[in-house]
Image (cartoon, rainbow, N blue to C red; front, side, top):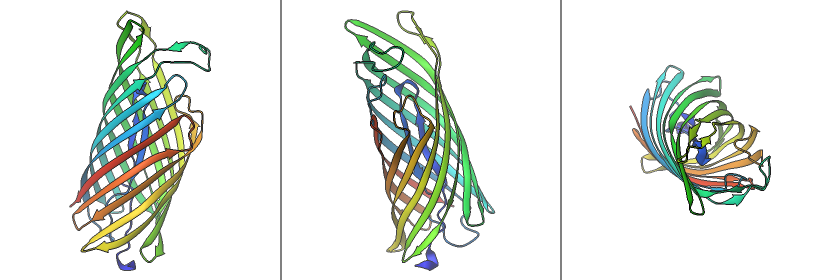
Length: 303
């Protein structure tokens, strides 16, 4: 087994980073690129597509409601020596059903929040790069996402509508190393950092009332990694594993009550000489007022 034990690389360590304006969506996942053999020359590049779907149960004061989102991505990676570079284009749509409720905290405690719904459509790019420093893989990304949120609020017979532009700027970094545990098992300790700022522009509603600009900042650290097992299935390499991460928000996104939580993913991939396919399911644990679950399918082709 050791003869083909792979040098797994983080091609996209944050494959989905969605902060969809007024809809209050924040979802993230991790991706490990196609298995690489120990050949130091490796394969010079790959292209891939993925589709993800997620559900968010949001119980935060002022944001109560349920969100469903989906994202389609197209990625390309290329290697030059020990360095790799990548670009990912994302299209994301999210819909949130907003529940009416009474604010429990803040300056407006006791005020009624009208129910309704919102929809955000956005497109974005992630520029990624990384290299190996000894046995440690290091890398990062910068991203920009732009779109529009349309929102409707209903209070009795009164209905207000508005639309606003939403932009998200982000960057992040990671460091990881591969540990061969023998008999097809491996571990990959990893630390990650994410900074993301979302700006929802000021606008006016259908009654001509001003809707103030909103700025939301997330600064997050993650520590954990990947534990996996690889075996042959016919002439292909099958990989199964889990990715537990302890998450700490140094600057919580939109009034998270819990600064510390856990992200947990399970995944399976099947890799041939040119094509890799996979599935991943991710959930967030330990947040009293914010629960998520998402699934993702992906396929990549090396050249």
